[in-house]
Every structure is written in C-alpha cells, then in structure tokens.
Image (cartoon, rainbow, N blue to C red; front, side, top):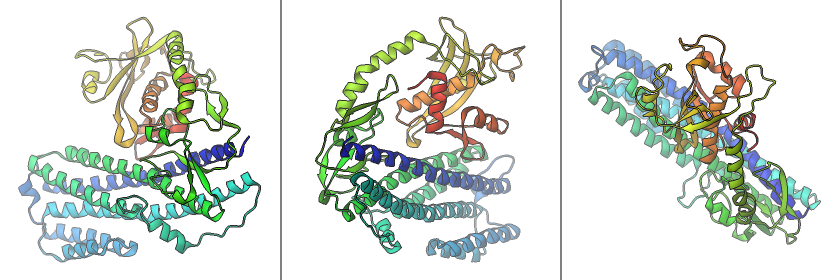
Length: 520
C-alpha cells in the first residue's frame, strides 16, 4: 500500500465519520424544532378558542383588544420570554419590544398571538445558535487533532503540535468562509427572520380567509418544515467547511506542502466533485469552497495530504458483488465509474428482473419467504381498492408515487405504499402504507391466517429504494400511530424524531434493504 492510498482511505473514513457526527447534531436540532412546533400549536389553540365564534374566526374578532384577564395572562407569558431572553443573551431589541408590549394597556389578540409565536421562534433559534457554536468549536479541535494523528501514523514521524486555544478557535468559527461574507450565526438569524415573517403572514391570512385551527396548524407545520430543511443544509455544509479549515491548520502546522481532492466513490457523487476528484494543489492555494471542500451543499468530498509516490491501489466497492476491490491509487472518479458502474448497470437490472424473488430472514418468526412478488408503480382510479381501509384514490392525489406489491404475473395486490419526494429535506416521506384486506387483521374483511407476512418491511424498502435513487442515502421518515411506535422501532430500526414522527436513517435503511432485497 502506498502513502497516497493510506491518505485516501483514512481521510475518506474521517469524512464518513464527520457526516455521522453532523447527522447527530441535526437530529438534536430536529427535536428542538418538534418541541417548538408543539408549543406554538398549543399557544395558537388557546387564542383560537378565545377568538372562535360558532366555529368561525375573522380578522375583526382577532383584532379585538384583550380583556383584563387575558391581558394579565399575556403579561405573565411575556415576563417568561423576557426572563429567558436576559438569561440567554437573546437580542436586546427583541427584549425591549417584549417589555413595551407588556407595559401596554391595549393590545390586539392577533398581535398577542404573533408575539407568543415569535417568542417560541426566538427561543428555538437562540438554542440553535449557542448549541451549534459549541458543536463547531469541538468539531474544529477534533478534526485538527485527528488530521495530525493520521499524518503522524502515515509518515511514522511523531511531530509535536500545540493544543488549540479557545481564543484562536473562537476567531476561526466567527470568520466567514463563503464569498457572501456570512458566518454560521448570520445564516441562522437570517433564516429566523424569514421564518417569523412567513409565520406572521400565514396567521394574518388565516383570519382573513376564516381558516380553521387545523388548516393554520398545517400551514405553520409547512413553514417549519422548510426551515428545518434549511437547518439540515446548514449543519452538514458548515460542518464540512470548518472541518476543512481544521485540516488546513493541521497541514500548515505539520509542514504538508501539497494536498489532493478525494471524493467518495459511489453513485451519489455530484458532477462538481467528479471533476475535482484527484486534483492536486499546493497548500498555499487552499481555499474552502474553491480549491477545497465543501464545493456545494452537503458535500462529502474531502482532502488528503499528497506525496509524489502514486503507486499502489485504491479501494472501491463493486456495485454488482458488493465486494471491495482494489484499483490504482491514481484512478479518477470518472474512470472508476466507467469501469465499475456503467459497464455493470445493465447486468444488475437484468438479474433483478429475472429473479424477482424477495427472501426474508427465516429467523424472524413474523416473516416468511415471499417469493414470486413484484412491485409496480400504479395509477389509482376512483373505486379501486374499495375494500381497503384507506381511500387510495384520494391518497393518490396527495402522494408523488403509489406503488403496489403484487403476486407476479397476476393482478393480486397484497400491499400499497404512497410516498412523496421532499427534495428540500433530502428525504422520502411515506404518506401511507397498508396491507391488503386478506393480510390486515385491522381490516373487517380479514378472516383468518395471513397469506403473507413482512409486507410492511417490503413496502418500506420501496421508499428506501427511491431515497437511494434520489441521492438521499436511504433516509425516509413517516408519522406513526402511538401504538405502533415500538413496533416500528423493533421491526424496522426506526427512530423517533418527534412526538410521533419517526425516521429510518442510512444505517438502518441499508440493513432493511439487504434483508428484503439483498446487497446493493
């Protein structure tokens, strides 16, 4: 194994580890979003109940002044926000606005509701900023040390390095890395202001239209979903940027003169990174976003020290066999793709079409071998699947895709799944999933032993497949009934990311895919 082979392998491993760390940080933030949504919905429900008249709402009603009792309760709420703001260093202008509102004798119900919603958003984003700042500082230190460690192991030279002081790290973290001159904090608060404006607009329009509480809650959830997607992009991209900066610092301190761009060799690699793969630069030319990663949002590319010996091999996964093979160390992404992907893609499809067999692990008593099955994207017509519990015609107008699990060479459908591509979230959302009446004990038509088991898992794999095809790494999520949460955890490795929202992440998706479909 050559030196460059060592660098490439080790630093790709480090980048994969970094993505998992970033994923954990985003999941932490995601939970905060879910809590904030729950609190906002509760506050809004209280105000709606006060404003509602004969199950109807109006802008005129919303603009009525608070009575003495409401004003007293509202002031108490504001005092809590003011206290939180002072304890956590929230924007002084916002605290002043709260104090002014608390002192006013007259205030509209609509304005009061907006202020409470804004208070929850301010708390959410303040927590995001402080938590993310701490995360980035620790990440920077960790990546600096790990880079130095890998270089020491690869060269066999134990070079002394200095522990990074907090002042230096603070300076680095606050300094913008992108051409727009914004740091992570600027981006967080910029997104916050946009979200508040959008929520306030939706609330006003809801009263103008006379929308129900449920409809307004859906609108707020929609706006929060966009904000959450922005948070995801921010976490992954900023993590990559500050990790890249930490590597540069380590290279400089250890006397590395050149570095190489190294991409992850798989079908998710972007065109930008394909073109950068294998390029070598002088360290003096290292510039994050230009000659060093990240080159785009959610970039998985990394850098590695470069030495003049380019002999040796570089590991790659054969997409047909799943086995690790060794290729020349100086192979580029495009050469690898031509040899290991493009030439085998047709064979893979032919094999899949020919066999059409799904084997489920026999050691699970809930599962049996399901043979001679196939999946098919279908168009649901009115009146189809009338004996099923859910209205799949109605669902087909909501979901991007409806897929049926069928007995091969027959018209018998034993399961249905509807899912939606959420590009902004880099995820597939499973809207609905159902087994056929003959396989669903919850269906009144069910009269005995199930014909097939394991239908749910097999259908979820369809969503996972779609996630892989879209470049989302197998990530899917859905909303589960309370009584099914433990079942989804146990059977499919799903994890809670909200009160009832569950997700199947990349690692668990791979396990589930292999269980029902074999290795990718």
